[in-house]
Image (tube, rainbow, N blue to C red; front, side):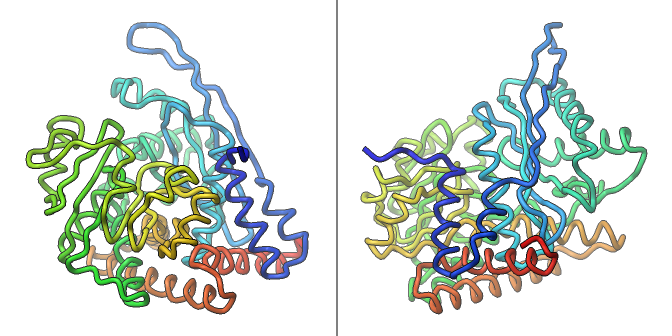
Length: 415
């Protein structure tokens, strides 16, 4: 049996293959195969019952050749350093694919936010912000939400950062509440970007959106807004899932009503008119378009052979392992990789950062138009590289990203 690769090892496999494919000098891989900086801290927090718990937390800068690092803050029970390193690297590649002036960063706290009270979450967030305040900044590293975090947590983080540094710098963090300098259109941006890239791929590969059966794994912010856009464009949402289970209906599911059900019950399970299925089952149901939008390493060598979709649009970070990717490639399934497909969120976060710095804010329509332009151009650039090197879209995206990062490192004299 082959060794199961960690997320960090998985992304290194892709980078090494692409580096060799492009004929880059070994120094490029040597630099990008190691994070630039890792901060690990312990956060002692007084709980509501008077006890004290110590939480492990991280913040990682992978590469800043193209600009300050950018990436989310994750609150997740099984958070580990290896996965955070991979997520930071994926942000380097993602930002380069959509040509943002950023490098890659990531961070988070090993905790279960669902089991913490609002007060405990606030104290934990403020402790984290205070501990890493010197490691982040508007020109250094700009966090944003990720799994388990939201606009409220960003607001607490921002407020604590102001207190610790004595500076009001709205651009230090993105996806903030609108009244605190957030950007219109940010909440829906990642799912919207998934849809925009799918539309461009549908034209290139002749897979119509209208009438398509779409399955989504996950039903958080990304999956919901992706499903909403597909539904409104005439596609059928046939399956969806969350951490507690999933639902299936070959005739289609109304994504808005499904979200209302989830808000009332805590899960998509039990939605009227649907068959209950497992959390991972949306990956292998009959569909035309699959959107894995849950966690990393969901499509593997064990289940990739059962995937029936014609096209996969990766809403999550790293949802497909290298062995799973190989099987999908053999089956000629079109895969729009995560570092392209889910870059809509960081793109609008960049717009927010720009708006914060110039003190002038755009309408939601302006944000949406700018996002669509960026995602369309990124798909075109990736597709061109894939055809040039005769590789799939994933390798095309890595060729584009690694080429841009390598050029920046050379110009700065790193290699």
